Image (cartoon, rainbow, N blue to C red; front, side):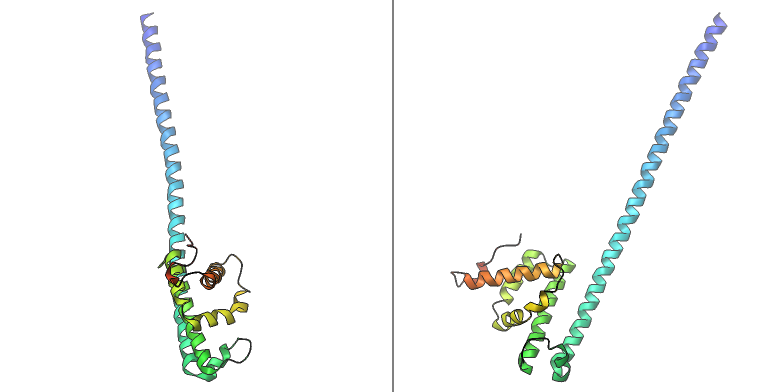
Amino acid sequence: MTTQKSWIRGAGSAAAGLALTVGTVSTLIAQHHQLKKLCLRLERREQADRSEQQRHVDLANQQRLQWELLSKAMEDPALAAVLDTYEGSVPPTKHRQFLFANAVYTNALLAYRLGNVSRMELFCHLRGTLQNPIFREYWKVTRSARASLEEGSVEAQVGRMVDQLIHELETADTEEWWVVGTSPE
């Protein structure tokens, strides 16, 4: 009998050890699975970061190219004529001013898109830029070009912000333009 009890006790200890081992292995397998999922998520995030960085590089290169083209057009009225999409005739001097206004605006837009400035900083910059009558005239004559922008695009959103800001500046009861406008944040 004593041998039988000893054997049962030994079998019970072995079963408990086996259960403990199985539990430990199951836990390790589950942790390994979770680790693999985390590694995959990290890899995807790193790829997304690299993609975002490449998008910023591409935007900056596009901006540089646009500036080079606009510079050539501002220097040569014959080249500037290619970019004359305004309704009616615009004198060459005014056209060069509009090209420069476009460069100023697209530079500010790019800074916002890249995250170099916040939406509030962009708003304040454009509010100051809108104090210039040439820029406001440029904005008015290019309205039809902005009408074709995709509704949810960043440029369309910023364009609507500028339109609203112009309206608020024109209807303001104060000469203190730096306080006019509904904050975008």
